[in-house]
Image 1 (cartoon, one colour):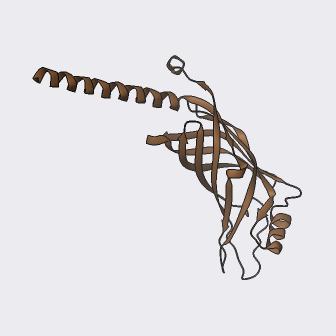
Image 2: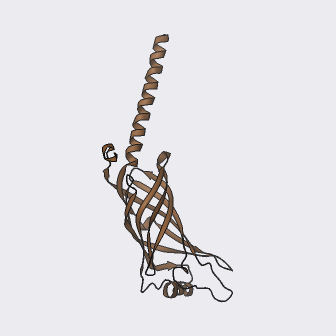
Image 3: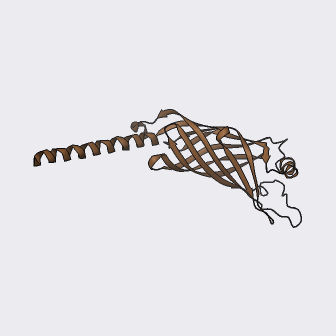
Length: 210
């Protein structure tokens, strides 16, 4: 009887270790997989906040398209995220026209783009992750290096994430919409919530790491 119990315990321990080894191997493999993330414009919300003396202005922009190519083995990134500058909407027509025509000059610069170049990330249990994406933001005809922080979850091929960063638009040469005592901040805060699908392109072998 005692020997049987010992054998059962040994079997359970072996099964546990085997399962753990498989999970660790799978996690390591997932970390080394390169892929292309296609963002879904219909499931992407781009919000901005501009503090002012009387109140904070809230508004949205629409994503035209978004593709992020990433290789965790090297940290290199590519692709492009394109936002329609003409879609800026705060709910007040006169203010929106001022933003599009005088601040963004959207007829001359109809697109706001972010081109990823490099990223770092931390993968946690359950597909949870934190990442920093560095790249070039092209806005109002100027190119600027920015770092975007993101967090979210990757389950299989599906990714959900939120991200945020700030844009010092006045420092970057755009018009300050402040009027007399009705002043607004000189930088605008951007919050993004998005959903996308990952197409895995390859998996780095252990030999290629050496």
